[in-house]
Structures are given as C-alpha cells and as structure tokens.
Length: 104
Ligand code: FES
Image (cartoon, rainbow, N blue to C red; front, side, top):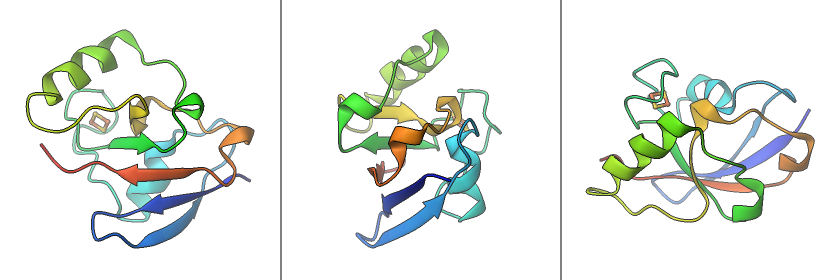
C-alpha cells in the first residue's frame, strides 16, 4: 500500500497510507488533514494539495481545473496542485511528499 508523506499547515510531516486505486482525499480526510466538505464533488476546494514533485500530480479533470482556477484568486496554484478528491492513489505515489494547501 503506498505511503505518502504529508506536510500539514503547521509544517509537520505525517505519513498516511492509501490503497492503490483509492481516492487520495479519503485517506487525508480520515487522518483529519483535509475537510473535503463537498464529499469529493470537486466543488469546495478544501481538499487542495500540492505534490512536491509535479510529475506525480497527474492530469486535472475538467471540473477540477475550473475549481482550481477560481481558487487561484485566493491561494497559490502550483504545477503540482490537485484536488485530492480527484486523485486516485498510484503505486508511484509511494514515498511522495504532498503539502496541504492553505484554505481559500
Ligand atoms: S472534496 Fe470538495 S473539492 Fe475535493
């Protein structure tokens, strides 16, 4: 099971495990690291994360792109930005560093 290192808003690093193919947001939410208030509909932005290595971030969905565009008025959008509810955990995420984005 991939283990990811998560930099919290406090600057702490925590490790979470997420099954391959599982929605990454669910592991982050279960660890109380994101709120995910819309439940994964790409419409709240509270699950926004940054992949330190943007090559691991994968492609944004169309709805996610619109959401990130509007979030960009309030928080920094980086190459590694993703809404974690739109990310399926992959084997190559093992050991990846992700950072919780500030709330908009
Ligand atoms: S949970 Fe709301 S945008 Fe991801």
